[in-house]
Amino acid sequence: MKLAKAWRLGMKDMQILPPPRHRGHQLKKPTWILVLISLVCMFLVVAYIYPPQTSSACYIFSSSGCETFSSWLPPPIREFSDDEIASRVVISSILNAPPIHSKNPKIAFMFLSPGSLPFEKLWDRFFQGHEGRFSIHVHASKEKPVHTSRYFINKEIRSGSVDWGKISMVDAEKRLLANALKDPDNQHFVLLSDSCVPLRDFDYVYNYLMYTNISFIDSFEDPGPHGSGRYSEHMLPEVEKKFFRKGAQWFTMKRQHAVIIMADYLYYAKFRDYCRPGMDGQRNCYSDEHYLPTFFHMHDPNGISNWSVTHVDWSEGKWHPKSYGEKDVSEQLLKNLTSITESVHVTSEERKETMIMPCLWNGMNRPCYLFARKFSAETLETMIDLFSNYTSSSLSSSSSSSSKTGERDS
Image (cartoon, rainbow, N blue to C red; front, side, top):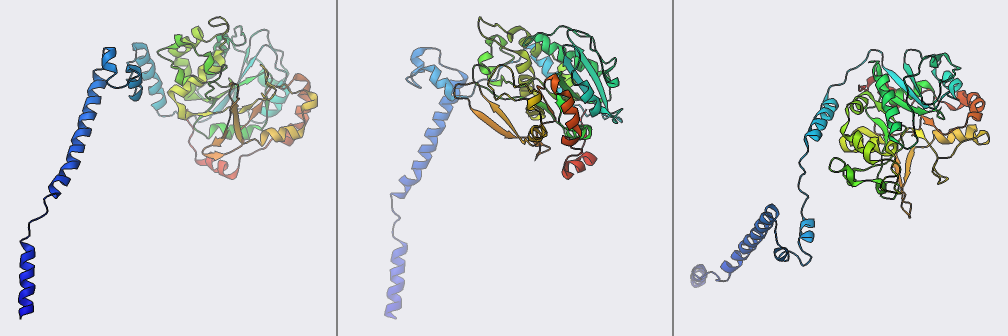
Protein backbone atom coordinates (compact mmCIF):
# COMPACT_ATOMS: atom_id res chain seq x y z
CA MET A 1 0.00 0.00 0.00
CA LYS A 2 2.77 2.35 0.88
CA LEU A 3 4.42 1.66 -2.47
CA ALA A 4 1.19 2.31 -4.42
CA LYS A 5 0.62 5.55 -2.50
CA ALA A 6 4.17 6.64 -3.12
CA TRP A 7 3.78 5.88 -6.84
CA ARG A 8 0.58 7.96 -7.08
CA LEU A 9 2.21 10.77 -5.20
CA GLY A 10 5.16 10.71 -7.59
CA MET A 11 2.87 10.89 -10.59
CA LYS A 12 0.97 13.78 -9.06
CA ASP A 13 4.21 15.62 -8.48
CA MET A 14 5.22 15.11 -12.06
CA GLN A 15 1.94 16.52 -13.40
CA ILE A 16 2.31 19.83 -11.63
CA LEU A 17 5.86 20.48 -12.79
CA PRO A 18 6.00 23.70 -14.90
CA PRO A 19 6.87 23.29 -18.62
CA PRO A 20 10.31 24.40 -19.78
CA ARG A 21 10.39 28.10 -20.66
CA HIS A 22 12.81 27.98 -23.57
CA ARG A 23 10.33 26.26 -25.96
CA GLY A 24 8.40 29.43 -26.63
CA HIS A 25 11.51 31.10 -28.06
CA GLN A 26 12.14 28.15 -30.44
CA LEU A 27 8.66 28.39 -31.95
CA LYS A 28 9.15 32.07 -32.77
CA LYS A 29 12.34 31.64 -34.86
CA PRO A 30 10.69 30.10 -38.00
CA THR A 31 8.11 32.87 -37.93
CA TRP A 32 10.78 35.58 -38.06
CA ILE A 33 12.55 33.78 -40.90
CA LEU A 34 9.35 33.64 -42.95
CA VAL A 35 8.66 37.32 -42.29
CA LEU A 36 12.20 38.24 -43.36
CA ILE A 37 11.95 36.20 -46.60
CA SER A 38 8.57 37.77 -47.37
CA LEU A 39 9.96 41.27 -46.94
CA VAL A 40 12.90 40.51 -49.24
CA CYS A 41 10.57 39.08 -51.91
CA MET A 42 8.30 42.11 -51.70
CA PHE A 43 11.31 44.38 -51.99
CA LEU A 44 12.53 42.60 -55.14
CA VAL A 45 9.07 42.66 -56.74
CA VAL A 46 8.73 46.40 -56.12
CA ALA A 47 12.22 46.96 -57.50
CA TYR A 48 11.32 45.00 -60.65
CA ILE A 49 8.08 46.92 -61.21
CA TYR A 50 9.68 50.26 -60.34
CA PRO A 51 13.36 49.85 -61.27
CA PRO A 52 15.98 52.17 -59.73
CA GLN A 53 16.53 55.28 -61.81
CA THR A 54 19.87 56.39 -60.36
CA SER A 55 23.25 54.72 -60.32
CA SER A 56 23.51 55.08 -56.54
CA ALA A 57 20.28 53.15 -56.07
CA CYS A 58 21.60 50.35 -58.26
CA TYR A 59 24.44 49.62 -55.83
CA ILE A 60 21.91 48.65 -53.18
CA PHE A 61 21.43 45.44 -55.15
CA SER A 62 24.89 44.80 -56.53
CA SER A 63 28.27 46.42 -56.81
CA SER A 64 28.02 45.83 -60.56
CA GLY A 65 25.02 48.16 -60.81
CA CYS A 66 21.64 47.85 -62.47
CA GLU A 67 22.86 45.75 -65.38
CA THR A 68 23.79 42.90 -63.04
CA PHE A 69 20.56 43.20 -61.09
CA SER A 70 18.41 43.13 -64.20
CA SER A 71 20.17 39.97 -65.37
CA TRP A 72 18.63 38.14 -62.41
CA LEU A 73 15.13 38.89 -63.63
CA PRO A 74 13.15 37.53 -66.60
CA PRO A 75 13.04 39.91 -69.56
CA PRO A 76 9.86 41.96 -69.79
CA ILE A 77 7.35 40.82 -72.40
CA ARG A 78 7.73 42.85 -75.58
CA GLU A 79 4.65 44.57 -76.95
CA PHE A 80 3.97 43.47 -80.54
CA SER A 81 3.47 45.99 -83.31
CA ASP A 82 0.22 46.13 -85.30
CA ASP A 83 1.87 44.31 -88.20
CA GLU A 84 3.14 41.56 -85.91
CA ILE A 85 -0.26 41.07 -84.31
CA ALA A 86 -1.93 40.82 -87.71
CA SER A 87 0.72 38.39 -88.97
CA ARG A 88 0.52 36.17 -85.90
CA VAL A 89 -3.27 36.05 -86.09
CA VAL A 90 -3.12 34.86 -89.71
CA ILE A 91 -0.42 32.25 -88.96
CA SER A 92 -2.27 30.97 -85.89
CA SER A 93 -5.56 30.76 -87.79
CA ILE A 94 -4.00 28.69 -90.57
CA LEU A 95 -2.19 26.38 -88.15
CA ASN A 96 -5.31 25.79 -86.05
CA ALA A 97 -7.73 25.35 -88.94
CA PRO A 98 -8.99 21.77 -89.39
CA PRO A 99 -7.25 19.94 -92.26
CA ILE A 100 -9.10 19.71 -95.56
CA HIS A 101 -8.65 16.23 -96.96
CA SER A 102 -8.53 15.52 -100.68
CA LYS A 103 -10.11 12.48 -102.27
CA ASN A 104 -7.11 12.29 -104.57
CA PRO A 105 -4.10 13.60 -102.58
CA LYS A 106 -1.02 14.36 -104.67
CA ILE A 107 2.58 15.41 -104.19
CA ALA A 108 3.78 18.48 -106.09
CA PHE A 109 7.34 18.04 -107.37
CA MET A 110 8.85 21.50 -107.91
CA PHE A 111 12.07 21.73 -109.92
CA LEU A 112 14.29 24.80 -109.60
CA SER A 113 16.62 24.83 -112.61
CA PRO A 114 18.44 27.23 -114.96
CA GLY A 115 17.06 25.34 -117.97
CA SER A 116 16.72 21.71 -119.06
CA LEU A 117 16.76 19.00 -116.40
CA PRO A 118 19.67 16.59 -116.99
CA PHE A 119 17.96 13.80 -115.03
CA GLU A 120 14.56 14.06 -116.69
CA LYS A 121 14.82 10.50 -118.07
CA LEU A 122 15.53 9.18 -114.56
CA TRP A 123 12.56 11.06 -113.13
CA ASP A 124 10.44 9.65 -115.97
CA ARG A 125 11.29 6.17 -114.68
CA PHE A 126 10.42 7.33 -111.15
CA PHE A 127 6.96 8.65 -112.14
CA GLN A 128 5.91 5.81 -114.46
CA GLY A 129 2.74 4.03 -113.36
CA HIS A 130 1.77 6.62 -110.77
CA GLU A 131 -0.24 9.02 -112.91
CA GLY A 132 -2.76 11.03 -110.91
CA ARG A 133 -0.70 10.94 -107.70
CA PHE A 134 1.71 13.75 -108.51
CA SER A 135 2.06 17.07 -110.30
CA ILE A 136 5.19 18.65 -111.80
CA HIS A 137 6.20 22.32 -111.83
CA VAL A 138 9.42 23.63 -113.39
CA HIS A 139 10.99 27.03 -112.74
CA ALA A 140 13.58 27.57 -115.49
CA SER A 141 15.36 30.82 -114.72
CA LYS A 142 17.59 31.17 -117.81
CA GLU A 143 16.32 29.22 -120.80
CA LYS A 144 13.31 27.18 -121.90
CA PRO A 145 13.89 23.49 -121.13
CA VAL A 146 14.09 20.80 -123.78
CA HIS A 147 12.16 17.78 -122.55
CA THR A 148 12.81 14.06 -122.87
CA SER A 149 9.84 12.93 -120.76
CA ARG A 150 6.13 13.35 -121.45
CA TYR A 151 5.55 14.11 -117.78
CA PHE A 152 7.48 17.39 -118.04
CA ILE A 153 5.99 18.81 -121.24
CA ASN A 154 4.28 22.19 -120.65
CA LYS A 155 5.03 22.09 -116.93
CA GLU A 156 7.07 25.32 -116.88
CA ILE A 157 5.70 28.17 -114.82
CA ARG A 158 6.32 31.87 -115.42
CA SER A 159 9.87 32.23 -114.18
CA GLY A 160 12.15 35.04 -113.12
CA SER A 161 15.91 35.42 -112.89
CA VAL A 162 17.59 33.73 -109.93
CA ASP A 163 20.85 34.91 -108.40
CA TRP A 164 22.70 32.59 -106.04
CA GLY A 165 22.44 33.69 -102.42
CA LYS A 166 19.94 36.49 -103.06
CA ILE A 167 16.25 36.91 -102.25
CA SER A 168 15.41 36.01 -105.86
CA MET A 169 16.05 32.39 -104.85
CA VAL A 170 13.30 32.62 -102.23
CA ASP A 171 11.08 34.41 -104.76
CA ALA A 172 11.46 31.45 -107.14
CA GLU A 173 10.53 29.02 -104.35
CA LYS A 174 7.42 31.07 -103.53
CA ARG A 175 6.52 31.24 -107.23
CA LEU A 176 6.65 27.45 -107.45
CA LEU A 177 4.56 27.07 -104.30
CA ALA A 178 1.94 29.53 -105.53
CA ASN A 179 1.50 27.67 -108.81
CA ALA A 180 1.39 24.26 -107.14
CA LEU A 181 -1.17 25.47 -104.57
CA LYS A 182 -3.64 26.22 -107.36
CA ASP A 183 -4.33 22.48 -107.49
CA PRO A 184 -6.36 21.68 -104.33
CA ASP A 185 -5.32 18.03 -104.54
CA ASN A 186 -1.66 18.89 -103.96
CA GLN A 187 -1.12 18.13 -100.28
CA HIS A 188 2.67 18.01 -100.05
CA PHE A 189 5.30 20.06 -101.89
CA VAL A 190 8.86 18.98 -102.71
CA LEU A 191 11.57 21.43 -103.80
CA LEU A 192 14.27 19.87 -106.00
CA SER A 193 17.24 21.15 -107.99
CA ASP A 194 18.40 20.15 -111.44
CA SER A 195 21.13 17.98 -109.84
CA CYS A 196 18.74 16.02 -107.59
CA VAL A 197 18.08 12.30 -108.03
CA PRO A 198 15.55 10.01 -106.30
CA LEU A 199 16.94 7.50 -103.80
CA ARG A 200 13.66 5.59 -103.38
CA ASP A 201 10.81 4.56 -105.63
CA PHE A 202 7.60 6.56 -105.88
CA ASP A 203 5.51 4.51 -103.42
CA TYR A 204 8.13 4.81 -100.71
CA VAL A 205 8.39 8.59 -101.19
CA TYR A 206 4.60 9.01 -101.32
CA ASN A 207 4.01 7.09 -98.07
CA TYR A 208 6.92 8.77 -96.31
CA LEU A 209 5.63 12.27 -97.04
CA MET A 210 1.86 11.79 -97.01
CA TYR A 211 1.49 9.80 -93.81
CA THR A 212 3.20 12.13 -91.42
CA ASN A 213 2.10 15.47 -90.01
CA ILE A 214 5.28 17.52 -90.38
CA SER A 215 7.23 19.39 -93.01
CA PHE A 216 10.80 18.29 -93.66
CA ILE A 217 12.52 21.65 -93.27
CA ASP A 218 16.15 21.85 -92.20
CA SER A 219 16.76 24.14 -89.22
CA PHE A 220 19.54 24.32 -86.63
CA GLU A 221 21.38 26.87 -84.52
CA ASP A 222 24.86 27.75 -85.70
CA PRO A 223 26.55 30.26 -83.35
CA GLY A 224 29.49 30.63 -85.74
CA PRO A 225 30.26 33.30 -88.37
CA HIS A 226 28.26 31.51 -91.08
CA GLY A 227 25.24 31.13 -88.81
CA SER A 228 24.31 33.70 -86.17
CA GLY A 229 27.24 35.77 -87.40
CA ARG A 230 25.09 36.64 -90.42
CA TYR A 231 22.33 38.11 -88.27
CA SER A 232 21.62 41.83 -88.51
CA GLU A 233 20.05 43.86 -85.70
CA HIS A 234 18.08 45.66 -88.40
CA MET A 235 15.77 42.64 -88.21
CA LEU A 236 14.62 43.74 -84.76
CA PRO A 237 12.13 43.74 -83.20
CA GLU A 238 10.33 41.08 -85.26
CA VAL A 239 13.31 38.69 -85.61
CA GLU A 240 15.51 38.36 -82.54
CA LYS A 241 18.97 36.86 -82.74
CA LYS A 242 18.05 34.01 -80.39
CA PHE A 243 15.56 32.76 -83.03
CA PHE A 244 17.94 33.05 -86.00
CA ARG A 245 18.46 29.63 -87.63
CA LYS A 246 20.21 28.07 -90.61
CA GLY A 247 19.37 25.18 -92.90
CA ALA A 248 19.48 23.75 -96.42
CA GLN A 249 16.90 25.26 -98.78
CA TRP A 250 15.71 21.90 -100.17
CA PHE A 251 12.48 21.27 -98.29
CA THR A 252 9.33 19.21 -98.48
CA MET A 253 6.35 21.04 -97.06
CA LYS A 254 2.76 20.17 -96.14
CA ARG A 255 -0.01 22.30 -97.65
CA GLN A 256 -0.73 24.13 -94.40
CA HIS A 257 2.83 25.46 -94.24
CA ALA A 258 2.87 26.34 -97.94
CA VAL A 259 -0.22 28.53 -97.44
CA ILE A 260 1.46 30.27 -94.49
CA ILE A 261 4.49 31.14 -96.62
CA MET A 262 2.19 32.62 -99.24
CA ALA A 263 0.50 34.74 -96.57
CA ASP A 264 3.71 36.03 -94.98
CA TYR A 265 5.12 39.39 -95.94
CA LEU A 266 6.36 40.83 -92.66
CA TYR A 267 9.14 38.31 -92.01
CA TYR A 268 9.92 37.83 -95.70
CA ALA A 269 10.59 41.58 -95.97
CA LYS A 270 13.04 41.44 -93.07
CA PHE A 271 15.14 38.81 -94.84
CA ARG A 272 14.79 40.54 -98.20
CA ASP A 273 16.13 43.80 -96.81
CA TYR A 274 18.64 42.62 -94.18
CA CYS A 275 19.86 39.18 -95.23
CA ARG A 276 21.80 39.49 -98.47
CA PRO A 277 25.38 39.25 -99.76
CA GLY A 278 27.59 42.21 -98.91
CA MET A 279 25.63 43.32 -95.85
CA ASP A 280 27.46 45.88 -93.68
CA GLY A 281 30.56 45.74 -95.81
CA GLN A 282 32.08 42.26 -95.85
CA ARG A 283 29.35 40.26 -94.08
CA ASN A 284 27.31 37.92 -96.27
CA CYS A 285 23.85 36.58 -95.48
CA TYR A 286 21.91 34.19 -97.73
CA SER A 287 18.14 34.39 -97.31
CA ASP A 288 17.46 30.95 -98.84
CA GLU A 289 19.49 29.40 -95.98
CA HIS A 290 17.88 31.42 -93.17
CA TYR A 291 14.35 32.64 -93.98
CA LEU A 292 12.37 29.39 -93.77
CA PRO A 293 14.47 27.80 -90.97
CA THR A 294 14.05 30.93 -88.83
CA PHE A 295 10.40 31.52 -89.72
CA PHE A 296 9.24 28.02 -88.80
CA HIS A 297 11.45 27.86 -85.71
CA MET A 298 9.62 30.97 -84.51
CA HIS A 299 6.06 30.03 -85.46
CA ASP A 300 5.77 26.22 -85.59
CA PRO A 301 8.93 24.58 -84.21
CA ASN A 302 7.15 21.29 -83.51
CA GLY A 303 5.73 21.17 -87.01
CA ILE A 304 9.07 20.69 -88.78
CA SER A 305 11.66 17.91 -88.76
CA ASN A 306 14.77 20.15 -88.44
CA TRP A 307 16.44 18.04 -91.14
CA SER A 308 16.06 17.75 -94.89
CA VAL A 309 15.15 14.56 -96.77
CA THR A 310 17.57 15.61 -99.54
CA HIS A 311 21.09 14.39 -98.87
CA VAL A 312 24.09 16.56 -99.61
CA ASP A 313 27.75 15.96 -98.77
CA TRP A 314 29.58 18.92 -97.18
CA SER A 315 32.55 16.85 -96.03
CA GLU A 316 34.97 18.63 -98.36
CA GLY A 317 34.56 21.84 -96.35
CA LYS A 318 34.10 24.07 -99.39
CA TRP A 319 31.54 26.75 -100.25
CA HIS A 320 29.65 24.21 -102.36
CA PRO A 321 28.88 20.56 -101.54
CA LYS A 322 30.61 17.58 -103.10
CA SER A 323 29.59 16.86 -106.68
CA TYR A 324 29.23 13.18 -107.66
CA GLY A 325 30.83 12.25 -110.98
CA GLU A 326 30.73 9.04 -113.00
CA LYS A 327 33.56 7.44 -111.03
CA ASP A 328 31.79 8.14 -107.73
CA VAL A 329 28.46 6.50 -108.53
CA SER A 330 27.93 2.87 -107.59
CA GLU A 331 25.30 0.67 -106.05
CA GLN A 332 27.30 0.73 -102.81
CA LEU A 333 27.20 4.54 -102.69
CA LEU A 334 23.44 4.54 -103.07
CA LYS A 335 23.03 1.84 -100.42
CA ASN A 336 25.16 3.91 -98.09
CA LEU A 337 23.01 7.00 -98.66
CA THR A 338 19.74 5.14 -98.12
CA SER A 339 20.98 3.50 -94.90
CA ILE A 340 21.73 6.77 -93.08
CA THR A 341 19.44 7.17 -90.04
CA GLU A 342 20.99 10.21 -88.36
CA SER A 343 21.11 13.83 -89.41
CA VAL A 344 24.41 15.67 -88.90
CA HIS A 345 24.96 19.42 -88.56
CA VAL A 346 28.36 21.05 -88.14
CA THR A 347 28.69 24.60 -86.82
CA SER A 348 30.95 27.20 -88.45
CA GLU A 349 32.82 27.99 -85.26
CA GLU A 350 36.56 27.41 -85.17
CA ARG A 351 36.07 24.31 -83.04
CA LYS A 352 33.43 22.94 -85.50
CA GLU A 353 30.91 21.43 -83.11
CA THR A 354 29.07 18.43 -84.58
CA MET A 355 25.39 17.91 -83.72
CA ILE A 356 23.82 14.51 -84.42
CA MET A 357 20.11 13.74 -84.18
CA PRO A 358 18.08 10.65 -85.16
CA CYS A 359 15.75 10.98 -88.14
CA LEU A 360 12.34 10.38 -86.59
CA TRP A 361 9.35 9.51 -88.76
CA ASN A 362 6.17 9.46 -86.67
CA GLY A 363 8.35 8.95 -83.60
CA MET A 364 10.31 6.03 -85.10
CA ASN A 365 13.92 6.13 -86.27
CA ARG A 366 13.90 5.74 -90.06
CA PRO A 367 16.26 6.33 -92.99
CA CYS A 368 16.70 10.08 -93.45
CA TYR A 369 16.89 10.60 -97.19
CA LEU A 370 14.53 10.30 -100.15
CA PHE A 371 16.62 12.34 -102.61
CA ALA A 372 20.25 13.34 -103.07
CA ARG A 373 22.35 16.00 -104.81
CA LYS A 374 24.69 17.15 -106.41
CA PHE A 375 24.96 14.54 -109.19
CA SER A 376 26.60 15.58 -112.46
CA ALA A 377 24.85 15.01 -115.81
CA GLU A 378 27.42 12.37 -116.83
CA THR A 379 26.00 9.98 -114.23
CA LEU A 380 22.55 9.76 -115.88
CA GLU A 381 22.87 6.41 -117.65
CA THR A 382 24.52 4.76 -114.64
CA MET A 383 21.77 6.05 -112.38
CA ILE A 384 19.07 4.70 -114.70
CA ASP A 385 20.76 1.27 -114.77
CA LEU A 386 20.99 1.22 -110.96
CA PHE A 387 17.52 2.64 -110.26
CA SER A 388 15.56 -0.61 -109.98
CA ASN A 389 18.24 -2.15 -107.77
CA TYR A 390 18.70 0.53 -105.14
CA THR A 391 15.13 1.76 -104.73
CA SER A 392 12.83 0.16 -102.19
CA SER A 393 9.11 -0.20 -102.67
CA SER A 394 7.86 0.07 -99.12
CA LEU A 395 8.42 1.39 -95.66
CA SER A 396 8.59 -1.04 -92.77
CA SER A 397 5.47 -2.85 -91.62
CA SER A 398 4.87 -0.18 -89.00
CA SER A 399 4.83 2.60 -91.57
CA SER A 400 2.58 0.48 -93.78
CA SER A 401 0.02 0.26 -91.01
CA SER A 402 0.35 4.01 -90.52
CA SER A 403 -0.58 4.52 -94.16
CA LYS A 404 -3.91 2.83 -93.47
CA THR A 405 -4.79 4.64 -90.29
CA GLY A 406 -2.71 7.81 -90.28
CA GLU A 407 -4.32 11.16 -90.96
CA ARG A 408 -3.12 13.41 -93.72
CA ASP A 409 -2.75 17.10 -93.04
CA SER A 410 -3.70 19.63 -95.63
